[in-house]
Structures are given as C-alpha cells and as structure tokens.
Amino acid sequence: MEAGGPVIPVPLAAFGLFGEAFNFVFSGTEAQTGGVTVGGPEQVLDLAARQLEVTLFALGVAIFLALPVGLWLGHRQKGEFLAVSAGNAGRAIPELALIALMAAAIGVGMVNLVVALAILGIPPILTNTYVGISQVDRASVEAARGMGMTELAIVRKVELPLAVPTIMGGVRTAAINIIATATIAPLAGILTLGDFIIARNVYGDAGVLAGAVLVAMMALALEASLAGIQWAMTSKGLKLERS
Amino acid sequence: MAELLAAVDDSFFTDRTGGGCIQENKLFCPGWVADNYDRYVDPTLQHLVLVGSAVVAGFLIAFALGVFAHRHRFLQTPFLAGTGILYTIPSISFFFLLLPITGRGALTAIIALTAFNLQIIFRNMTNGLRNVPQNVTEAATGIGMTKSQVLWQVELPLAMPEIIAGLRIATVSTVALATLAVFANGGGLGTEIVSGSNITFKTGIIVAGSIAVIMAIVFDGMLLLAGKLLAPWKRVAQ
Image 1 (cartoon, chains in turn purple, yellow):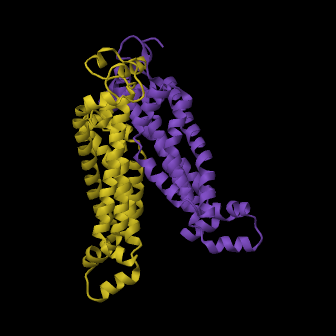
Image 2 (spheres, each protein chain N blue to C red):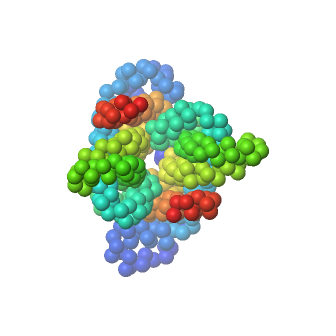
Image 3 (cartoon, helix red, strand yellow):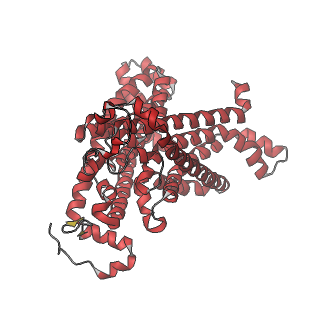
C-alpha cells in the first residue's frame, strides 16, 4: 500500500493516542520507518485471522491429546499424581522462554508454533478432565454399570456429561493461555496481531495500542464463545441443579 | 519482522568466553554460563520485585473484595465477572492498554500482573468461605461472637487452606508471566530471553527460563509450607 490513503479524521485527534490507534485500525498510518502505510482494516483482519487460526489449531491439538488421556485416567481413577502435577508444572512454564527456545533451537514456522502453544494448553485440560471425571458420583457409575452399560458407554453417557463444566473450565484456561501466547508468535515467525505490539519500530505507539486493544477484544470474544459452548453442552439437569 | 529474527551479530559474543560452543550457538554451553552467571543477578532481582509486588497487591485487593462480597453476597457475581475480564485480557495486551496512562516501565507490568491475579485469589477465597460448614458459624454465633468476630476468628482461618491454594496458583503463574514484562520495559528475566532484538541465543534462553521455573517452584514450596504451619488443625485431622 502506498502513502496518501484516507485522510486522518480530525475529531479523533482529541482522544490522543486512542484516537491515533483508532485511525491505525480503520485507515492505517504511515510506518515509522517511512514510506509505506501500515495498519488499516485489511492488515488488521489478516493478522487477526492468523491469530485465531493459530489459537484454534493449537487448542484443537491440545484437546485431541489431553482429553482422551484425562478421560481414561479419570475413569480408571488412576494416575492422580500424574494428572495433577501436569497441571501444576504447566503453570510454571514461562511462555516467552518456551516460544523463544522452540524458535531458536528447532526453527521458526507454523508447526513449531502450534506445538509450543499446544504444550501450554495440554496441562489444564488434562488436569480438569481427570478431576471432573473422577469426581463423578461413584453411585451413578455403579448404577450405570448395573444397568448393563459398557465401560465406553459409561464414560460417554454418564461421566462425560456430568464433568462438562469442569472439563470446559480447563479448556477455557487453555484457550486463554494459548491466545495470549499467540500474541508473541511473531517471535516464531508467524505474524499475528502481536506484530503490532512487538514491532513498535514499524507501527509506532498507535499501532502498539491498537494491537493491545484488538488482542484484548479477541481474547474476551473467545472466552465468551467458549462460555456459550459450555452452556449449550451442559445437560438440562445440571443447569437446574445449579440455579 | 526481519529485525527480530536477524542473526546474532558477532560482537554479541566476542567479549565472552566459551570457545566454539558459543560461536556455533549450541543448545547449551555450560562454560559460558559459568563465566556469565553474574549477568543474571539483576534480572532475577527485578523479577522477584515484579512477582512480589504483583502477588502482594493482588492478594490485598482480592482479600478486600472477598471480605466485602462476603458481607454483601449480591456483589459476588459482579466481582467474579469483573475480575474474570481482567484475568482474560492477555498480560502482554494489558501492558500496552496502560501505555497512555502509565507509560512503559515496571509499574505498568506490576499493574497488569496484579489485575491478572485478582480472579484466581478472589475465586478461591469465595469458595473457601462458602465451604465453611454452617453449623460451625452457627455455633460461633451461638456463643455470642459478633459477625466480624465470626469472620476473622472462625471463617477466614477455616477458609485459609483454599486461600493459600489460590495464592500458590497465582504466584506460580505470575512468575511465568512476568518474563513478558520485558515488552513493557519492565525488566525481569525476560530481558535475558529477548536480548536486544534477537531471540536466537539458546543458552541464554535456557538459563533465564530455568531461573524462572526454579523461582516458581521455590515460591510454591514456601507457600505450601506456610499453609501447613498456619493450619495446624489440618495435620491433626488427617
């Protein structure tokens, strides 16, 4: 894009940096390095799409790997130490060091990024799935077994529905960690909305603030969507019990 | 983005020993660490200040909110939702939302990390107070305790194991998150991970990351111990 795009709307200047950030998103501003126009709806949507893509991809991988293990351990009531310590250890991993080490030691790119982000997502999903399943009233499980249900049917029709709120709690924690860390993905060579924040020398303070607002909005929107999914997945009986 | 991924320029290493290991940028160079451990002292101290301030401030605010919401139950839902929003906003984004107000620096990082902590501590405190058996509070009222005596001498001590559990989660998460403070010019161990404009020096990343993990484990152990010392009845009961 060449310079000389849409003129900055004057009234917005009154809002100081927030006004500039608004302009950055909706019409773009000249790069600090000069010459080209950066920001603007096209780039914003592009980077936002990349951030969402990376986040959902990594969250999907984390769920795919952690959920079956959590279900199995929880159903067998075994491996509490493993499941719970995984959650504790996961919290101690410094996100920045993980991304930086993956990028420096293995290389930049989509696959490495998704692996690093999935590593952050696995612990809370594993721990919460284990806790949710193993806390299901054993009387309900015995009753299901007495009715002649297979073990798989017990997991699917009794334990899983009752554990939905706890499991989704873990998925939401994982999603927040992943989308937050996807913000520093530019360090691993994948440009997300975090590029506006990290590459201040290109986008300036207006770009940094715009990036911060967009990332915050995106994280809140993701959290709200997952809360909605959780509500839709929770059985009617559990909802009545809680209200 | 090219600037960020640029290869390390030679001058970065020339004044350091470690031989070929550094020049080849191998995964881990113990010789370099032995010669340069002193460069991690300041970032580690800064990291301790960031984490300590954020956890103490988060605890004080969440504790006050918790006591207030305990007296006025209708406030629990809005407080939970409000702290939930602060928890959900990624810290790195929060740093720069504060940019027009507090600028760049450690204060900005501490405010963002504090905001992140509130939800974890508040939720555990609320759960802890809710799980105090009703017959205990009724007995306390029955022997003539006032409402605030019941709260401070009965309910809070009984809720303390859960409050400490929340504090442990908050502290460990904050140690990890505080590495991001480097983006807000807040110092800390992140400065040794993203040094200048490069993130390609593997040994440096491993050392800084390991210090953060060890710090988290030590804090966690200290809080675990404090919880055991402060709740001796738990040991008797078990």
